Length: 345
Ligand code: FE
Image 1 (cartoon, rainbow, N blue to C red):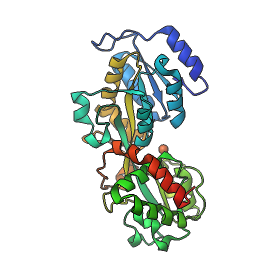
Image 2: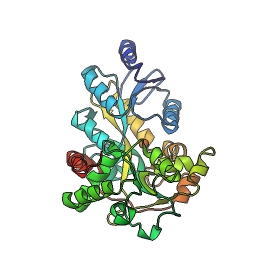
Image 3: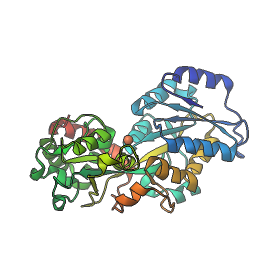
Image 4: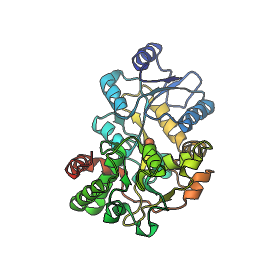
């Protein structure tokens, strides 16, 4: 059962009224209910909920709200919150939820073994479910690919008036710059952001898909986007022509490509923490991990999982920045100030 933001308040009341089943700790059983608060609206996640219901007999109820609204809702509900599991995108948003003390720690041998150390919170407050990479998309007929190396390429004077990227308020950009501060130091990251803003083809406008479309339309020649937006267009019969003449460049230089996660943690006031644990462990098993790659074009966080996805295969291999994602939040405020000084709206 799914609820959007409109149904949130009513949903909260009705869930509180009908209780949440047993939480005996001896495993899930028919009649139990798990409540997932999620900011994701993807087929991979619905397939995950269905598979968990099938495997355990537990009913999954989801309440969806976008990014920061989800955190606001959880804060407002406090100890009355019906949420068992919190799912959101980007380690920067997981950090914000962590700062609001919305998570309860969860550490298990299964999760330690499945999820690489850099892709989870050190105290088990959250775990990456699936990975995304921030990449360059360019028009090879207008950009000399030999000039592309890493993120620093976007600051190259050769690309003056050619760069498209979304606004600096977006968490994807904030987390990337938080990683670049860690990588280069604040001074170099500041110069980079200022130079990139000086290369803009236009003021930031729209989301990542809009930046890809702007490159396709000739409004700019290179854009900074998350890889799955490009892969989604590649895999879509109706839209694949749009990206047929564009390329993805992996910014492998220096420490490698900025990789981030969608993640999940146990809610601090979870009525069913034991079911929450089972759900998060289930999400790391092979089939749900494949859903993320095959239905949403993300990469499994569990490295041993094989999957089929024509677009991801075409995009090929890349070098991941090994930074621990838990560190991104620490640089978040500095990243925001740096954007302001750079004149990157
Ligand atoms: Fe996204």
